[in-house]
Length: 109
Image 1 (tube, helix red, strand yellow):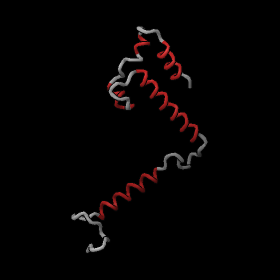
Image 2 (cartoon, one colour; image 1 turned 90 degrees about the vertical axis):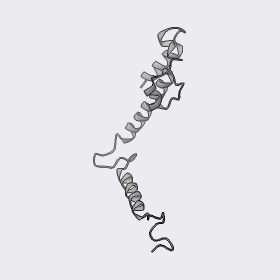
Image 3 (spheres, helix red, strand yellow; image 1 turned 120 degrees about the vertical axis):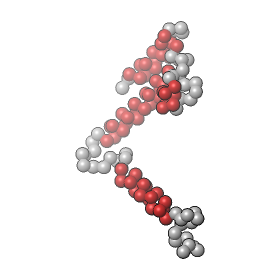
Image 4 (cartoon, one colour; image 1 turned 180 degrees about the vertical axis):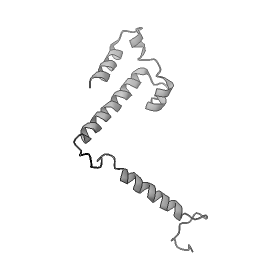
């Protein structure tokens, strides 16, 4: 996709003082700074670069899984792994004792 590279180029090459040129230094909206981790001084240009990178990742993921059969687990995200980790944490929490020791440790009753 060439949309974001075109937008970025337009901002970078816009004449100083134009509305588009101001996006090189204009702060991005606060919500965008937080969501895209742009930092306190993140600009609209920084925002466009972050969105471009995110869209490229979506493109790559979509291409990677486009040939996966309907009944096949997504090779990039297996929900069974998440469930296994949740269950493991649950069991470990259940094994915790009030005194901070785990059942089965030496000296535990």
